[in-house]
Length: 150
Image (cartoon, rainbow, N blue to C red; front, side, top):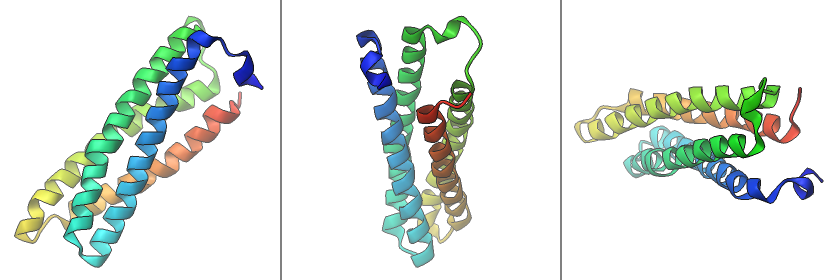
């Protein structure tokens, strides 16, 4: 019902925000599964795929999501006063999640580089745990953004 009364000027900004979020969560989910399977089965190709999903899908998705979020906030004039609870949850998870995503990409990249020398398992496990943790965190964020609790 709310989507029918939303101003048209906000639609494209909100589309970019939601599309970026979906791409980011999809990349995190794919990376988490591939990394978990890869280090469990000791399959190097899954570990490399998981890192690539983080670096080339989740990170660009995060960037598009943040740009869309700021654009939507500006169009909705939400920067004029106090932030609603759901907006605060979104900002905290996006900012901390972005830092953790960067850490996961760096750990995964170093781990993938060390695979040829027989190392890197610990770094890839850290990248896996961060990825799965971020997926769970963003599920809560999706609930907060859709339900808008105050």
